[in-house]
Image (cartoon, rainbow, N blue to C red; front, side, top):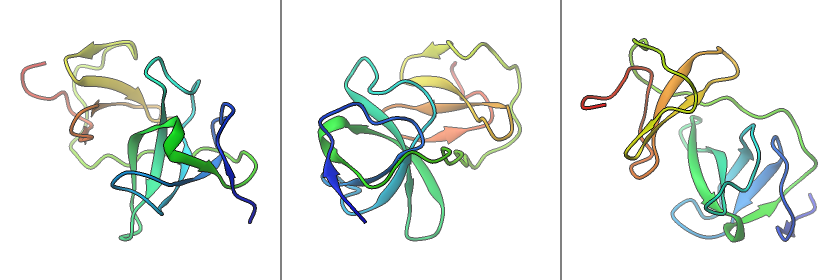
Amino acid sequence: MNLQMSTETIPAGSKVIIIRGPNTGRNGIVQSGTWPNQYGNYGVNVNMPTGNTIGYWIAAGDLKLETQPQPAAQPQPQAQAQTNPVPAEAAVGDWIQVNDPKSGRMYWHNKKTRASSWSRPDGI
């Protein structure tokens, strides 16, 4: 396995290793989309010790590229069915709507708390 520090844009589907922050040492896959975002972060589905995958925003300097691009892993939010779907561009406060490419459904993701929900959060 060849590891290199990320100095270029990492394409969606790439396997990465997190080198700094609370997920240091964990593997992940860059989510589909264009990265880095306007804040210099990548959407990464991080492999947790429990076997689950959780989506996080990871700063570009906190990633190492592991291998060549592969299909992106799918987010697995744990919540109830979504109601009142809205366009993908919708964002209220810290909550944004994200498309789950595997199911085609939209889900809500909180950028600060990193919580995810299929249903619209209260107050939004």
